[in-house]
Amino acid sequence: MLLAGDIGGTNTRLAIFSSEAGPRAPLAQQGFLSARYPSLETILREFLQQTPFPVDRVCLGVAGPVTGGRVSAVNLSWAVDSQQLQQALAFSSVTLLNDLEAIAWGVSLLQPDELFVLNPGEPVAGGVMAVIAPGTGLGEAFLTWDGSRYRPHASEGGHTDFGPSDEMQMGLLRYLLQKRDHVSYEWVCSGVGLPHIYAYLKESGYAPEPDWLAHRLAGAADPTPIIVQAALDPQRPNELCVATLRTFVSILGAEAGNLALKVLATGGVYVGGGIPPRILAALTEDQRFMRAFLNKGRLTNLLARIPVQVILHPRIALLGAARYGLETLG
Image (cartoon, rainbow, N blue to C red; front, side, top):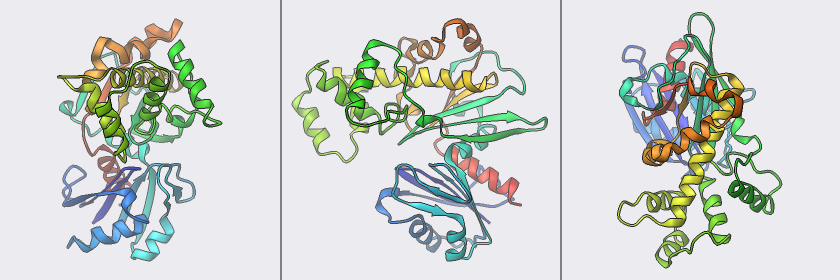
């Protein structure tokens, strides 16, 4: 039995898989709110107490750079150590993957109805594929063809310097540089980043903040869902929130295009994470995402041939971690 996990800044998802049933058929699964627990070990113990299946191997996708079997989760206070978990819980092996590497392992298992096409493109057989995923943070990864299958590679590209592409975004960068020394793409293109865009637009006088929205935001532990809901409200979309979401989409499209150029992703770009499936209307509105993706000067025509698809599978990182564990750990 394999225990696979997707360990994120907001949610931790665990499931048990068998070689016979495969990675698309978990025998048991459960979700946890990560911040409510002092450590991953605590979550694992609680989950194992609730399942009758004996587990010996573990494969976990964790949001953060994995070095020497250890990772400090970027948007959590935890440090996850594979050796410590193996000894504390008596597993035969514990393997840690970067969460975007885990997503990349799951890409080839996706069915057509688990993808939303933003640009059909013309995929090149064996071409590099890229993954960009805004959730709590912003993750990036890529896959290369080794002659027999695709090999995922982790990246921390979401922490590279944010590069504004218009006057408003330049103002956003100047605003954030007054508050911190380094402004990354994650700081403006993730669940963490959406409130920063909103705060800038509000403080710059783009539009007034209504009392009902101010009240809801003041009482929220996480303002991001409120901003997104107010932007997409079909009855009364809020102007500030609409502008926030549109800015987010433009920045995401631009960075997806940057990633596609950096790895020459002729095999396609996959947009994952928890946010994109919830904002498909905003991604397709006025071709905003793809216009930003394609706005690369002389290489626009190259990018136009690259397929771009949103991952709709709600457990793609868990699926990928399970695939890696079942195929690689034996």
